Every structure is written in structure tokens, then in C-alpha cells.
Length: 164
Image 1 (tube, rainbow, N blue to C red):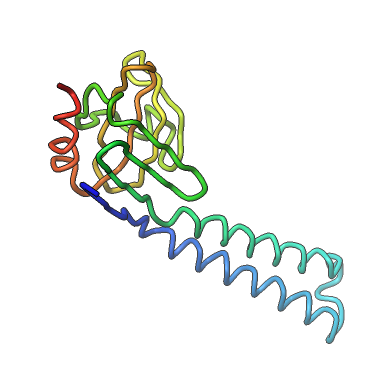
Image 2 (tube, rainbow, N blue to C red):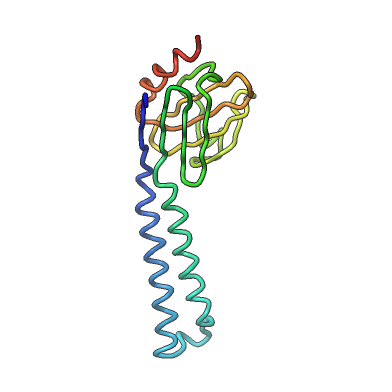
């Protein structure tokens, strides 16, 4: 293995915590409505609270999957994994690697797993706020791959021999 990095999405812990607290609160309201009685003069059905409690637990689990972007560079391939999504690039197909200059919000619509375009080239983006991005151009496709990293210079240096 030439390079491995786990890029954390630090804000995800706060968001997951909020969703988990919301799910506990919803289940507690449903339980209270069964034991004590209806809440307010026009209460929602009890199943509503339990359903939304389960919904927020599921949302927390889904967001937990996206707490880290994993980057692995091997001799023959580059593996990028962000949550449930995985991108594998054959190193022989890499024509260039360079620092991304695009604004993620304007070019891709934000952060996460995205599809966008920059200067007429389609891009598949796996980015996290607060980290610079590296762009990989490939021989066999016009689509570029963009991903966040805390060490863009090192990744670009590792991928340079693949250009020749």
C-alpha cells in the first residue's frame, strides 16, 4: 500500500447526536401518551411518534456511514470509499492529478457524494467540508474524480509517475 488516509467528517457527530436525541424524544412522547394520556387537546396518533423515532434512528445510521472518507492508493488502483459508495480507479488510467480550484457549493451543490461539472468536464465528487480536494483525470473516460484529503501534495506526488 502506497498511501492510506481516513478523512473524518467532524460535523457528522453533532448531527448524528441531534438525530439520536430526537428519536429518543419521539419514542418518549409516544410512551408518555400511552401511559399518561393524550398530549394536548389535538394529539397526534401514538404510532406517529414511534414511527418518527424509528425514522430518526435510521437517519442516524445512514449518516454514520458517511462519517469518514477512506482513501487507499495501491500499486495498481486507487480506492475511494465514502459511506455506502465506493469508487475504484485503475492507476494505469490516471493521466493527471491536481489540486481542485472549484467552489464545492457553486460547482457541485455542496459536499458529500455528488455529480457535477467544472469547465465543461463532468465530475464525480466525494468531498468533505474543510479539506482541499484532488482531481484525477482518466484516459478512458471524460469524467474526473474529485475527493477530499488532508494531504493533497502527497497524493499528487504519488500519482505523478502514473502520468508517464
